[in-house]
Length: 402
Image 1 (spheres, rainbow, N blue to C red):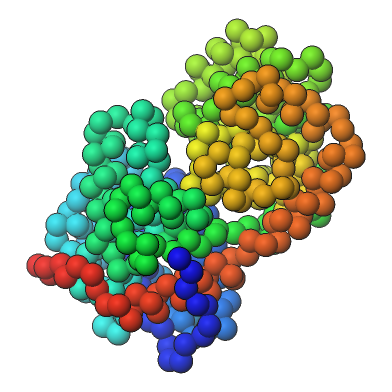
Image 2 (cartoon, rainbow, N blue to C red; image 1 turned 180 degrees about the vertical axis):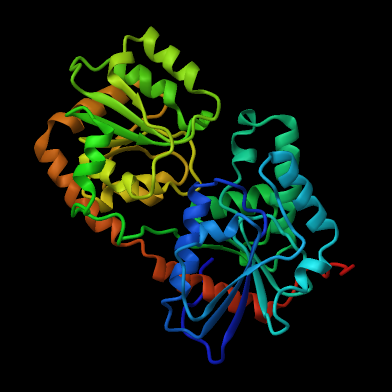
């Protein structure tokens, strides 16, 4: 479903809840929040945004200063640093919403939950962002408890919302089918690339950062935390099939307790010398790595969107990517395709993108053009249209205010 992005008369008073944000989260969801809220400050439409934060949210938006954006620290609400304390705070906020909801301004018209969790509940029209339904599509990657939690929190929050936003048409179709939400209430809005950060031109600290990393001369980069669906083991298998031992593999992202297993697998395949895992890198470092890489590889089995291939394209880096789930929609014809379940094909594609300079040049040009199609200003305008539609429809569920 699409929603008209034409401007509507009158100011829009938007509340945004980031109360479920956890400490140290630097995921794609955090990128979405920063990109979207930052773009609201640059909109020509008359949109006033009030963001309700926990103690970690201020860090997430620390560099955001706009006249039409107010950042408010929620009184009497702390999520702490552990998973247990975060879940306890979120549960308390869900069960007793009044003290949190009343911290939004009285003239707020609609509330957006970009982190999916509906805290606090409200009588107002609501918009929930549900990035994907991986727990329905790949249930084996989740424990029984995780699946139950996601069905209650994610599916339930989306069903109760006035409108639902998701990242791609692929995700939209799956949400409608798996969660049982009417098609008229689910809108696909593509995420975007921060073109100020991700660009072909080198930044001021480029050489210093490259010296600190001490990278190999030729390497393929895979920026992905060690989630099972990211398919790192299949990538190791593919790399072991490449005869050119000067092609190295550099990984970034959170280890998630799986790094020792990954290194052991690399050792069994004779890849230990050719593998570097940099962990979570800074926002300044990631574009530097994209520009320095021979290519970016992205063999993921599942993505609700899949921003790293686009970020690499915006930096002028050729990309070899899986086209599973939403990735075909995002990448278009600007990548060489990887088959996530075929290590031999993957190896051939990686070897080709590292050696065929004519192909690399074609992919660079296609990638730069592709990345330009994804802007945060367009995403923000589309969100505003969804907010106005939610205001027209009114609240779907009237929650009791304690």
